[in-house]
Image 1 (cartoon, rainbow, N blue to C red):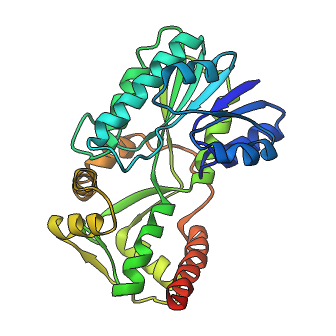
Image 2: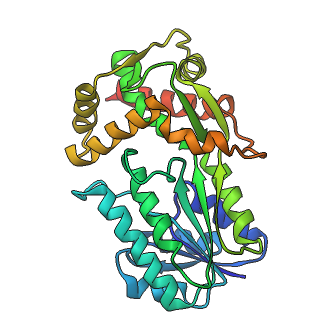
Length: 302
């Protein structure tokens, strides 16, 4: 098949392209970075360089594809994050309609069943609703768990303050996933006979924060690593100090409330998948430890 992927050579799109190319499909990878052309070609795919904000470009990139994989690239420079996500979804909607694509696999998120109160995930609710209006197009939304790799953002706090923390408590549960497991699920869906509009939960592990901190702390030689529940103000200050705009940081504070209250996982808890991704937190902990030690050594060297 001819399959077009958004997401450049990111944590999901790169391994997804690998799977599809090995299975004999003709893959086009969309990237906004012209410097990625060589790497995309080296992977065995065709590069399409342009912006997801450009409907004309997207339409041309989608034309002739048997299926497309859509995702909203992060953009920390926008003033209204939900609006940016929703507008990207509308761009995909228009390009899919204009190009004649009939099968779409869309990266969404756990919690996207809710229209609000979930921070940035509310934008993915908007994307799902938009794509579901496509007539004669099969759409499968992958409602992924929270990415393991987001724990890399905690490394600075661990190395400088000796803690992990957020604005929810250690008894809160997280439903998590490895990007590789999302790639495998996306490949499965892109190569299947999609019909109608539906969603699929893609998750790898579920644990309480206290367990997560113990596993990651032990992996880096800090088995007693504590979890600290920050106030909203402290969480906001930490994110803005790291370079995030107050507007976007505020949406992540809101997401923390959705985690704390459990509403983020309500629909997932009612419809847990039979098959989970194979990469468990203890497996990811090895990757976490490797990245942690590299960054700490870099800090020491500086």
